[in-house]
Length: 190
Image (cartoon, rainbow, N blue to C red):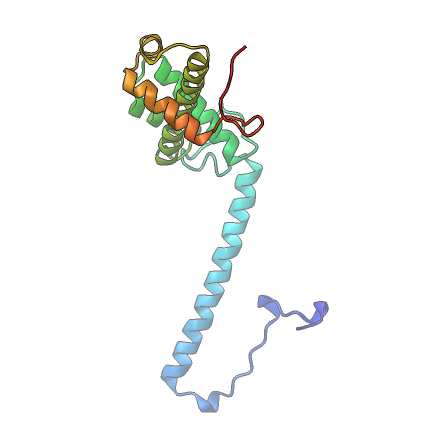
């Protein structure tokens, strides 16, 4: 590599070409190549200047989708933060009776995020919430069974058929076998 002071820059590069080796077509191709390089570096410098100017004016990647800074949305500290905010806003709109697809589209437009990405995150959050509710219900069923309720009573309490209660209890016991005391799995109530 070059020492730091000897690193060539575009403006300081000098090309030595023996023109005797080139015919007119090759020379024209070489001139076109160097001309395109010069245009490329000029465009690069212009884009860098524009990016610096945009950053100074508060134009960020979050506002790129709508083409201007959104006056009511504070800039998030990260992508995750804005998407969390977007999911929460969508949930609130859907809870208020709005159509799910329309709520996702309007929230995405307001925050300048991708509506497809927001839709996926919203669906994931719905599934996570449903799984949490189901888990809590299953734990409550296990507690009721531990208190001595029969499957019919538990089913009536939680709106399930007796066979569903039986299946839930069986699956919960398979996942979490009862603790053994002295080698026995029998649980005695006192």
